[in-house]
Image 1 (cartoon, rainbow, N blue to C red):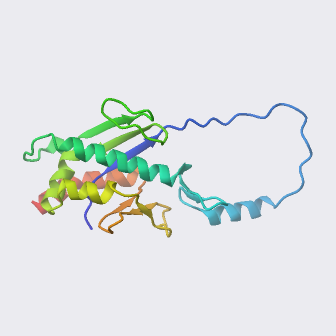
Image 2: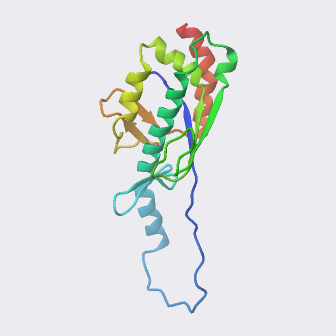
Image 3: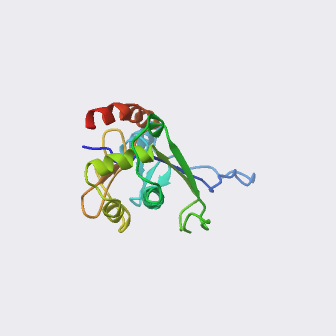
Length: 198
C-alpha cells in the first residue's frame, strides 16, 4: 500500500440550531428508555460515522456525498496547480509544506463554483507526494482521471475506527478518512519513507 496524497477537508457548517419558541410545553409520551436509545445509537454509529433512518451516511455530521465531492474538487485543484510548478529535487521543507485553498460555493478566481457548502481544502506535502506518484509511474492525468472524472464509490463496510472509505470507479485508488493524530503520525513518517524509496 502506498500513500499518494495527504489532505485535510474543513467544511463550513451554515446550519444553525435554534432554541424552541418558548411557548407552552406539551406533555411527551414515554419513549424508549435511555439505555435502549444508547444501544440503538451505538448500532448506527461507528467512530464518527453515522447512518440515519433513511440510510444517509454522515462523517462528523457531514453527509459523505459532500465529503466525496469536496475531496474530488480539492484533489483536482491541488494536482492541477502542481502541473505549473517545475519538477525538482525534494528538500526537507517539502515535507512540511502546506497549501490551503478556500472553495466558496459561488466559486472564485482560482476555484470552480459547486453545489456543496463552502469548504477549506488543505494539501500536505504536495511536492513530496508528487515525487512519490512519479516514482510509482502514476501520471498526473491518469491520477486525476481516476479520482475526479466520476463519482467515488463509498465502501459500505467501514473499518473498526469508523473511517469512511471511498473507491475510484476504476478500482485503482482507495481514499480513507483518518483522525488528525493518525494523519500527523503518517506525515512524520514521510522523510523516512522518502529515504527508503530513494
